[in-house]
Length: 421
Ligand SMILES: Cc1cc2nc3c(=O)[nH]c(=O)nc-3n(C[C@H](O)[C@H](O)[C@H](O)COP(=O)(O)OP(=O)(O)OC[C@H]3O[C@@H](n4cnc5c(N)ncnc54)[C@H](O)[C@@H]3O)c2cc1C
Image 1 (cartoon, rainbow, N blue to C red):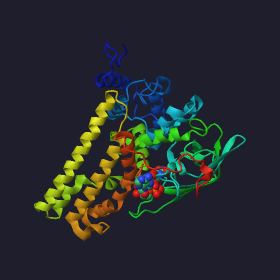
Image 2 (cartoon, protein in one colour; image 1 turned 45 degrees about the vertical axis):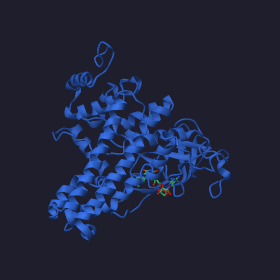
Image 3 (cartoon, rainbow, N blue to C red; image 1 turned 120 degrees about the vertical axis):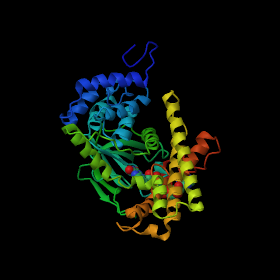
Image 4 (cartoon, rainbow, N blue to C red; image 1 turned 90 degrees about the vertical axis):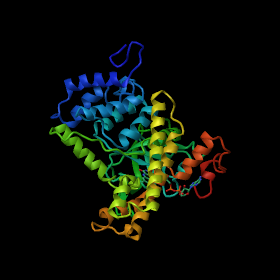
């Protein structure tokens, strides 16, 4: 029995919260530099409590991560940084990387010293990610990478990248891919920001010209990057909802630095609430537009709120099942599809309320231009992290056992696929 488990060896949120509170009382000092505070957190195993003890965790069940991060905020303290380093790169490295790689890469992610981006998609390889054609060739102590990536969120300011590149074209497409940890700040990497139709610029095209990756920065084995990529994609679906941590407004160096870090990070994602359709605004919008008693509008709002509630309950049911030890199942794909449906339906309801005026932008427009941003941002939710059609394919094949899609290029060497190799 430990302090976090009862006599039967079972851990509970209450026991975990109680032990964490004691530790925070003894160790939390808001005047510490943020990195120093996070170092304490890592060394005490409170950084990611579900991870093994030697990797900054306590070997607790997966649900403990959420309990601990919420409790740290409630106690006025700060947890590990948000972002694709913590949410995507770190669990992938932990699951597939060598001990040496874990030792070198995990700590700077969890202290916030290094930020990450994802270099997966290419102009010719999005849904068909395994068809990617960026190459990596071993040259002495490093891999030399050439190719082009696209739609890479935050690549213009990331320190490191999760990179997929082809290291062998003589085998079928899924087998010749390697997963690398690429240092972004080097002459061979050029990130060009793309202007979106909602006027933001969160994505980049990334040109890789003789970019260098240290020989040992391979996550998993050479040629087996697909398995690691699937791990990243599974986490991406799970963390589709991006939540800004509610840091205490109290003074203190660690808090100031954490608030500034979140400010920098979330600047890229300022349009993501609009991407989700802003169902929270429909009632206010209908009242402001004077149509709150219109029966058609009321009916549309009721339908939207119903959809949203049902999808929240589905997510909650999945969370409880995971907490009870169930393996992640279809809920990632179902949740992604539900988010797309809610966002689209919400955009439709906002359009119904406002009519053509919803297209106006600027401070004088409906709700200060938020509705126009909703209409121009909602399409992204059906694409990012795997399109709706791909989620349906996954559900049909993996969950419902329906016949698999015809994949004629699956078993031939990549070099023999027309237009690819
Ligand atoms: C907000 C956002 C953030 C993103 N961030 C990143 C990032 O950080 N890093 C990164 O690498 N990428 C990122 N992406 C790219 C994203 O992963 C791809 O856009 C996505 O995988 C789709 O690929 P694609 O754009 O090439 O479309 P395509 O694959 O060309 O698809 C075009 C259309 O064909 C359909 N289609 C394709 N194949 C099938 C099939 N087998 N069955 C049925 N229909 C099919 C698709 O559903 C879609 O409607 C981001 C995208 C968005 C919108």
